Image (cartoon, rainbow, N blue to C red; front, side, top):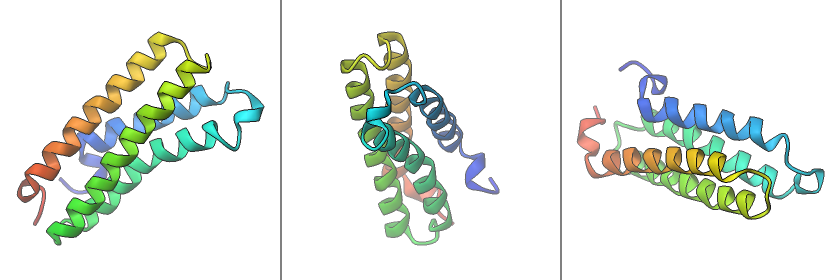
Length: 121
């Protein structure tokens, strides 16, 4: 593994963040500085924190902290997806697909947090 981009969890989080970006383009203009910004920020932050964690893998506590941040951002994204569904900005199929992707991402992050030695130098 050479970079953070080689991590499956990074690839899935980046892909999911891009899906959310594309879908959120259709959100109402009045949501621009609220739900749209929040869901875009949290979804992008997952892959950003993974990149930082990868660079901090020499330091187990810093590594785990960044993974924990990524975990929090993934869970936050699920909340914003719930709001988008409740506001009828996305349909239930889109919600389910994206929510499950973030559930899978969360599972991968938890495994990394539980077994940091596998990822550290």
